[in-house]
Image (tube, rainbow, N blue to C red; front, side, top):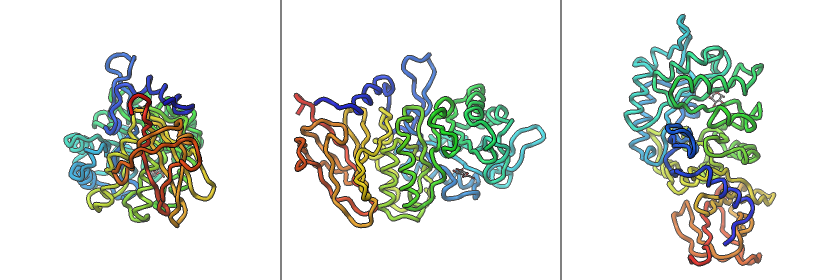
Length: 409
Ligand code: GLA
């Protein structure tokens, strides 16, 4: 079966970008084909992990971080691909007379190096947060003018991931400030993912891939369906900017924080995977329900997010009344498809192979939430042969459609 337009271009991209890719490993550095020996692509697949902000805000401590690292292992999240444990704002209290950043001595009495070691000993990676301006969003000391010394400090602690925020920085030049972090990280000799967080204010999809591995495209997420809806719309516009090592970041996950129904969390998680978004859990992993754990560790959905082709899926059909079809081409020639129902009542959704970038013909369909093969469906190009499925209100149906190539089936 011949592939059409968008899909064909994506598969051609794969030849250059997804060699050596490994779905589900959460973005571990990989050798870059054709690059000098030893060089790596940081975040070859979208980073996966946990960040303290959405659930804990400023209530961070070494006890919390250790508990989360333990829970990440015990819950199966590490094995599902989650890797980075990131402390967001409020771990730092002042800049010392020696210019070194000082972690809160009461909340982190053992020091950051010991905490990084604890996280590393569990097969995980360690991340911190700072700000490109003189202060963080919560008024803690930022890195402005101290980028090099902070990079050296982070490297000494064993930091693998740094989120750099943009509060108190509006008068600064974003491409320049973030490039300075990248240079400082490189000079430190340690591989550190740079997570750019300027909320899309300076059009990061145009320049951020030069310095960072991911960049926020929107203002902060909140734990409600309306927030998920507007983020989807905003992040979808920039799909062409994403690829291995450089990802649009529609913000961290709210799955499990209590403000949405399970069906809504399933849709939130599925669409982040469709958008090849970083999957940073933001809930309390130490006490999540089995249902929430099942969402966060759905291996078939994670494989879509982590697919080595690294294409950001996009809306391919918008019916205008709250029903959308999203499609994401995958490295093996299959296409991940999400049917999204933004209305409250269940409705029937349908799509054709043409709409998801495939030619008419037979294809197998697998349901990634039911974990069920739906057999072979033949789209012969007629309206009657469109693939149809009921989609729950504020919910999703997520599928993997694999064309049966002539001679194979
Ligand atoms: C900003 C960021 C959030 C979080 C907070 C911390 O709002 O966008 O993700 O880091 O700051 O203060």
